[in-house]
Amino acid sequence: MAHSGKSAFEEVNEKVSQAGEILGIKPGVISALKSCEREVTISIPLRRGSDVEVLTGYRVQHSNARGPRKGGIRFHQNVDLDEVRALASLMTWKTALIDVPFGGAKGGVAVDASKLSSIEKEEIVRRWTRSLVHVLGHHRDIPAPDMGTDAKTMAWLMDEFHRLEGFQPACVTGKPVELFGAPGREEATGRGVARIAAATLEEHGVNVKGATVVVQGFGNVGRYAALVCHELGMKVIAVSDLTGGITNPNGIDIAAIFSHPTLETVQSEERINAGELLEIKCDVLIPAALGGVITESNCGKINAGFIIEGANQPLTIAADLELRGQGVVIVPDILANSGGVMGSYFEWTQNIQEFSWPIEKFRSELDARMELAFSIVHRVSKKYSVDLRTAAFIVSVDRVAKAFELRGSLV
Ligand code: NAD
Image (tube, rainbow, N blue to C red; front, side):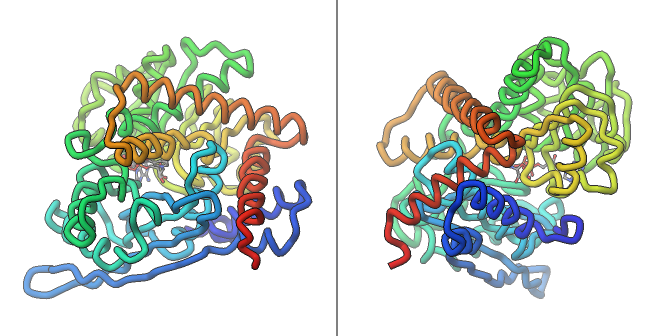
């Protein structure tokens, strides 16, 4: 997706360069960290009646400096190589920021997931896995769900991988709990987003109880972010998805609407169009759907005190700059939505140890590790007098550059 003239990957690399300059990292090392180690493009012939439609799929491995590559698979019509590169790179910075032993990768298929039958989705992910099996594996590259894919998709991926390579449940995370998944993983990203929202309000002396929240997206991330915000005593006053939005100034009972597959079937709340949602006055705005939704052209209409990035790259760098100029506090994606990959790490380690944790342990470990990352980012932000996104990149780029040099990758 284009981000105000710059591509999504260029936008990430702008932050990498900035962090590299602040840290005094050698330009050659920064160039290496701005490149992707491996990019694989595949074609996926999908049966359509008596004919086939050829889809394009990707796996981009950005870095393995700190461990096996890790990152989700997205099924969306806007997926292209640049977007996958950007998301793969963000995974490297995210895993480094929360200090889990992974690198970064991302996959995708350019297809509208909302128009696929379950059988078509299964065919696509099995073909994707067969074509890429040589670069995947629990110590090479571990996929997970992202937009348009879910636990069921990951079960098919694991099954296909097992047929080809034998038993290895840690080859993919975000699996169903009944099939080597970890209780807590499904909610982990949204839970992390909500708890980071609460911690940010507290950091700025704003009462968590009663704080108003608006959430864009009611999929895996948005749904759980809204639910946990609600459970923490915040007032979720609007949510939206592809089918439109609903609002209630007194607070939506998120628990009551949680199990609706889309918001289309929710009754008794006032309906708004999805575009209007971003402009609602609120304490906390959580964009948790697509990238590039807040740009220079609409950021003047944002009416929130805090933006917690549930999605990856929901703000362009230009919008980020302008909003910060207006006093909006922005918590970047690589911190705010890192609960997902933290949860994937817990699932991966449990699979490898053939041991499982109760959900209470999963949640308390997740909360403690995210609190640590939150406090490190704030400390670095103060130390260098920079915003939270720049601080997060300083922490990550420093860790990855050190690992890259220590491994002797330059030899
Ligand atoms: P999902 O497919 O489960 O849900 C996406 C939601 O966004 C759906 O409710 C969809 O209807 C809605 N949506 C799509 N276009 C919209 C629009 N124009 N306006 C309003 N709503 C719209 O995807 P997800 O897994 O929740 O991922 C959402 C974002 O979070 C993505 O940017 C993804 O990269 C990021 N993310 C996901 C995870 C994870 O663990 N799933 C982890 C980290 C980051």
